[in-house]
Amino acid sequence: IVNGVNIWPLAIETVLLGNPLIGNEYQIIVERRENDDKLLIRVESNTKLSEEDKKALAKKLQRDLREVIIVTPEVEVVDPGVLPRSEGKAKRVTIIENSN
Image (cartoon, rainbow, N blue to C red):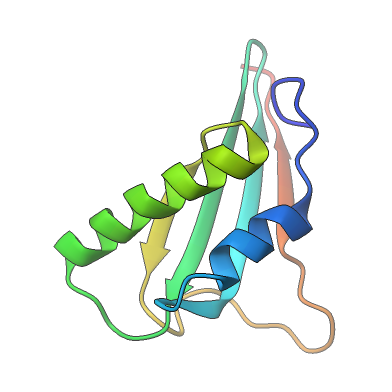
């Protein structure tokens, strides 16, 4: 739940993996804050992109995600291989409890 809205990781995954420029790795980070929550989605592109192309892709993903999950996330597009890999089931969601 982010700012009172139920967010389903599968809904986020469907949007991300539906974009041909996106690789298979992503992270969903929820930072719990006193007055509001911050939703950050970090996603790998499937090829190395320029900073300008990363920003444009992040904006598009942000719009696409907003239509599906109602909340506007911050989206960060990173190069392939940047996000941590794990053996077995990937841990895609991280919740950071913050008292500020």
